[in-house]
Image (cartoon, rainbow, N blue to C red; front, side, top):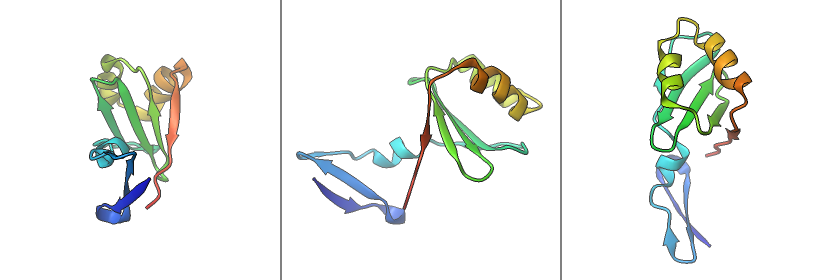
Length: 102
């Protein structure tokens, strides 16, 4: 395995000659800043049905197999934190914490 530097000090991995050119896109989903006391930004990939939520304090979680309608409703919710807690977090979607170190 060999690595090469990417912008911002991140390393792109090359394993057995296969270069992961899109590592930046894999690690950093485009997220939209939102007005919320608990959520800083939200992103969604409609093809993969992945919802990414960045909380105040910079903890980032990915929720898997989230229907696009829930993402749209979350973005329109008056209380994004309340909607997230009741309709996504407590609904049992599989999730993972994203740890990004530069």
